[in-house]
Image (cartoon, rainbow, N blue to C red; front, side, top):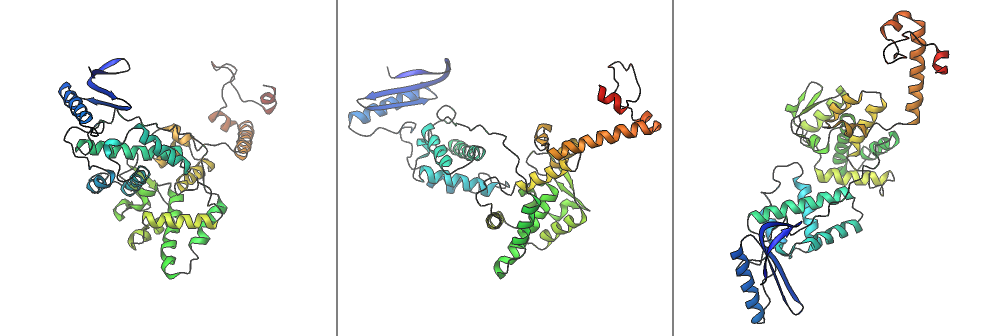
Length: 382
């Protein structure tokens, strides 16, 4: 008997597993029905008896064997990820995966070992764990799309283990004043007639991004109808929660100019000029210095300006306050400023009785006993 009830974690899955071996040749495959498993077993046994190569594991008898990355990717374009702001990036990542595994690789042959090869190749290239997860996600989405259209016959859920990488929080990278000045000087002083305009447009986009905290695609797809006075209304966001971002008049004018003049950079132009400017200011090897740091910079400056963390949460469009708190990094100067503010508050409370009455310090006793202002001497003594 070469057909067995399939189990996962000790529980029956309702499927059937074909397991065959002839010499050093092994064959293993799961099927949804017993009848499919029987046909598969018979096809493999017949192939071995005739001295032929049996169907590849997962290839149903009679199924076409030409569904490869190279043949299916063109079929999926225009259907998968279409209309999404990340469409170009998604396809670029899938194409890279196809390059790692080979464009002639059958989709039915993509298994856990293939996924491991992708991870290894990306790690050797210095790809961050979070980015590796994006690659794996795009590969899985593509395989699911192909399976539903019978370009892949092998199940995905039980056949492939995606070793998702643990994404560390890491440090928040932002742009310093000196780095911002360096980007501006490089991008606004190009003399090449062909590059002068695109470089200037990229600087304008960076300028707006730093001062609004908007994500790249939120700005690249911005339209005039989204701007009302000095407010930018974002209807389609990463968190699917619309938000409104305030702007200064100068920032508003820069964004309006990009939209009205039709000079808003493409993703490719932005990436190209960002990399050139990054190299020009000596940060070519800083993998964390990507365009998204403009968003980190905005949040960081809001924190340093003393803006309430809940206001920052709404401005940035974070769903969870924990995300916002990542930016609330405490600097030594912040601690010193806090000490001065507390000292000023205590002094004012003791010098102005009306101020003290309206803005009393925390009670010394949890029930309110011993109410009254605290002198500096009592604070020290406490």
